[in-house]
Length: 541
Image 1 (cartoon, rainbow, N blue to C red):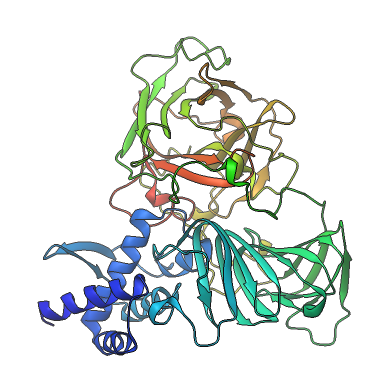
Image 2: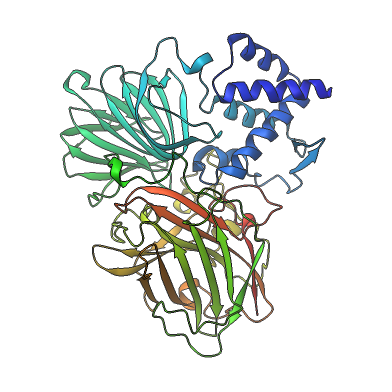
């Protein structure tokens, strides 16, 4: 295929992305993508661009499509040729085709950003970016299509008057003014009287409005979560046509799962589980972009701590050579940055950071609520492997959601390999709960995020606001036993896997406003919460 064809693919793809494509442009692009080489080239551009800039992409499709399957080798790679990115697959043209179809469907709109028969109009938007990198604005219209939001809050008003609030990352398909399909993420629906009967369908269940405001989510186990704020809803499982319906009213919350057998579990109502309102204009800062960064560090040093540290968020007793620094890309480089530290001794892993934050220590997310949202109010996350036997890099990833679940397996974990559920892979979330004035720690294990511990024992942690009020200091000591490494903790000269993420929130401490992801493996594409192979090196002194 000629260089001219690649240039044409570049130009037409750019027009589709910014909604300036004409009908003839769309037809021309489809014709070009009928060629295998053009198809692979387009897929490489779309996937790599999405990964490089939008680390916060939604967990559903990218996990199942970008990641290699259990039978695939790691020979799939990205290479640069003639100053362009091309996807080089290991005998997987089908994978390229599927990815291309997904990327072509993500946030696509007809010429000029208008639909022939719009089902929904954007009536509110806060820092919105699609997985493909396209922004969204007030007045944009959508028809029967899928919305794949990587960042921000999106408010839609459907033709029948239903108001939807989507919180990224989220995937939602609009099917009619009275029905949508939630594929991943969180959505809140406010239904007026004339639209009673509005439905939100998930892979497992359908929630039918009876005149209410309610939220629906897909949790980390791919189960359906329902919470009712006002009025009543009716629910039923999709595969059982004649089963009894379940009814929920204001103040109710439940998890509906269909992993071979249907199950309804009542759970505690959590007011912070869903975002129901947009922040007030005076609480916003900066332009419409959200802070993010381009990762520059492959490794960090874990300092040997000779004398136990005082966990007081002072940091003056840390070794001077134990720090690393990172910052968000402009225009946020000065106000969104971190100086991080890692240390260890025979009993503890030590974590500390000096974080610049315009709205420090505001989180209202309680550790007793939804374990999937604790990071959103502002937090520091550390992902780390304490398995000395596997070293670095770590071959482990989240379950491919296109693989059917098997009811006969424990927790229906078909699609996971033993290394994917390794309990020595830990995800630590550390944050300050402002209403209680206390430091919090949540630990999840394995790439399946099972056995989430929101109240671990034996750790110590402290947050302290900086004098200027534009940031905070934090310091934690975490026993190796909590990381399932008490019998064989890391030793000097070990090279293990680790990754840092710092999250920022709005002034109210509830709505995520951007993040910084640092210490990554430059040779591995993907998302750090999907693939442990993307984690960088933790080099123990």
